[in-house]
Length: 402
Ligand SMILES: *[C@@H]1O[C@H](CO)[C@@H](O)[C@H](O)[C@H]1NC(C)=O
Ligand SMILES: *[C@@H]1O[C@H](CO)[C@@H](O)[C@H](O)[C@H]1NC(C)=O
Ligand SMILES: *[C@@H]1O[C@H](CO)[C@@H](O)[C@H](O)[C@H]1NC(C)=O
Ligand SMILES: *[C@@H]1O[C@H](CO)[C@@H](O)[C@H](O)[C@H]1NC(C)=O
Image 1 (tube, rainbow, N blue to C red):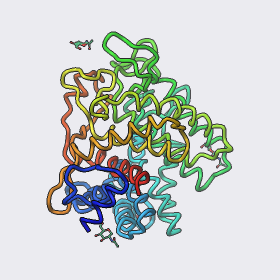
Image 2 (image 1 turned 90 degrees about the vertical axis):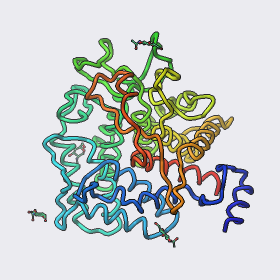
Image 3 (image 1 turned 30 degrees about the vertical axis):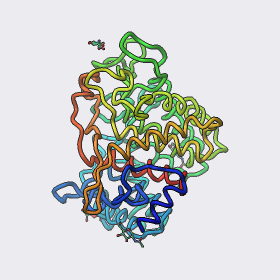
Image 4 (image 1 turned 90 degrees about the horizontal axis):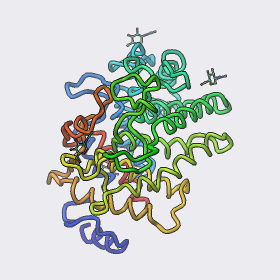
């Protein structure tokens, strides 16, 4: 096996690993199996209580792609068990889910409900998906422009994170049950375009490098402590927030019909951002800084979840043909970043599992949104937001190689 692995790696000209000895051919499978071995993302919290969690939704998205690629039933079963831990036999959603705070985060599990409904036709998954859709339709407040608030406690605030959390579900639900609802496709498009217009960096400032990328969020009322007086956006570009948004762009494009003008509008955004993301990578390591607006500043560091999300988004964008890459710059940037990741952030535990390093625990705009805030948050080993993103990045990387 080891010989085969080495010769395959040589054949495809990828020396992704320094020592191939204990490392498997597929990092996607290794990452997924390691998460499963640790019971991560299974619909339960660390004390075994049901939990509706966007991180679980993110892992489920990766496991679903891996199931479709490998046909290994283990991945499907893990997804189903995870959802069955939070959806009761009659379709009520437990696991701490409540509509009163209308948070977008839990909605990220919704695409898995739809996937299971499609495969099993078990009504309980449809009932559960309806509950999430009803939250968006009837509970979620919006800005005067129509952007969903991130949560009730953050009035008038749109965060990039929320697009990945809420709008992939909104699009997948519309595709499944209301494919001809133009109003819904308009509304989904609006969530992406408002976020883009309100957060895009237009000018450099003395302490902020110009990348033309998107600030973490904005406050339409311009009243919260971090809001820019002019445009209302937050002060820094945080890698993971932009990573969520970038993944949402490439994923929604495979859902929203090409016959609807929103598809072209979202494509335009992706085509502008993809080369800018590639260009923002640190030229030496190839990966991205936690606070992208202040590369190289003391205490800033290379962060692994945002970097993995960018690799997924860039490679998928080129593979599916959403973005042209005639001179190979974008794919080269993604491959360089990927090489750094496997060499620096993947640790072989020697028991068949791997650890994943350097994912920042959280980045919230329930703060002053400052550089000092972001760099003061600790990193966590095997944080699922980063590990699942690495599985996604690996799935895309492996599309390139075998
Ligand atoms: C499927 O994946 C599981 C790990 O998640 C592994 O133990 C099993 O051997 C795989 N099955 C096949 C047929 O590859
Ligand atoms: C659905 O199931 C849950 C949990 O088993 C239960 O609490 C709830 O009362 C049920 N609702 C209906 C309408 O049957
Ligand atoms: C179409 O979508 C809009 C917005 O999502 C929704 O309010 C409306 O009820 C939908 N109409 C139908 C017929 O499903
Ligand atoms: C600007 O950056 C310098 C160091 O690069 C730092 O000392 C200073 O506090 C920063 N100013 C602001 C307003 O963040």
